[in-house]
Length: 329
Ligand SMILES: NC(=O)c1ccc[n+]([C@@H]2O[C@H](COP(=O)([O-])OP(=O)(O)OC[C@H]3O[C@@H](n4cnc5c(N)ncnc54)[C@H](OP(=O)(O)O)[C@@H]3O)[C@@H](O)[C@H]2O)c1
Image (tube, rainbow, N blue to C red; front, side, top):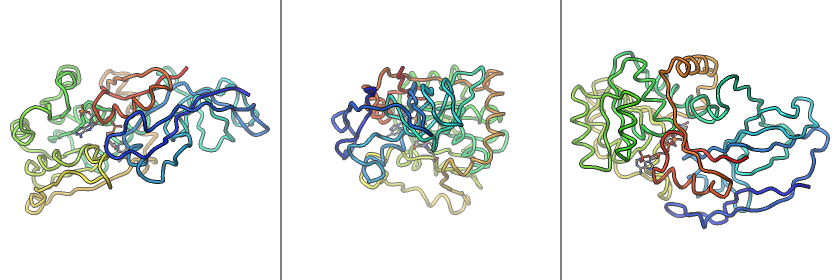
């Protein structure tokens, strides 16, 4: 038996969660039986979609939380896995996982850091890629606006737009984030949405309007973007993080929907699994862009499982630039 720690939700939050809603619990894990493996997690991902699950039964109380993770197989009695294999799975938020192999994928990161498979080369990257190119039907040279642009999905989306020669506007919640977007990622215009009027600042940043608004935020951002949309513009609805801490994930009122009529705007929600079939093309493009320097990434890393709740909460207070990760081993 080995002692390990895992993160439990112990009380359902109303509004922004606090660390008191979580507990770090010690448990004993045995050696693998026939057909089982023991995984030592090395990195865990936190994602905004975990928040709505805290308020409904999708995340049970007093049980280890679900989250993306990568780790190493430290003991195997399973024919498909061997000791030393790098693996990826969705049963994170714990140090050790005893598994029958269900939902565990062997990871071969090649000469790139394995953590990239938790963001640019993983679900967040595919979300940006499919959301922009498929749902958003992005064309070369269009005008693109991305909210939460300095986050994991947003920072990939703005760079894909740049690669496609688009005039690209990003919004973020601090000047440090805006500086990164403008000076290092090469955006044409940036908006710190916490300063001044978002509607006015977006109007100035988009003198020729917006063809694609990639919405990560909802509420006030969507309200400000709609009047700026060009005829036949598209709004892929990726997420609405501004709403996730309210009951029923209700956003602030969007009052400008009438702009959709004469401009014939399409607004469409999507979920990343819709793009699973494009994963091979996605990986080929993304690895190429990373290697030729056109796709940059940043990671905000908190150390140790004790900091996992803090990392999750930090997504809603804007603590991260790029992908928020928790480092374990
Ligand atoms: N549809 C899908 O399949 C799919 C898949 C993955 C993610 N998503 C969505 O994509 C969005 C981004 O996810 P991510 O993993 O890349 O997270 P992220 O952007 O790395 O982190 C969240 C960021 O959102 C910003 N934010 C938080 N509260 C906000 C508010 N009230 N108003 C404006 N900005 C706020 C913060 O940055 P600032 O400092 O800029 O405020 C924070 O850093 C989320 O809405 C998520 O649900 C959707």
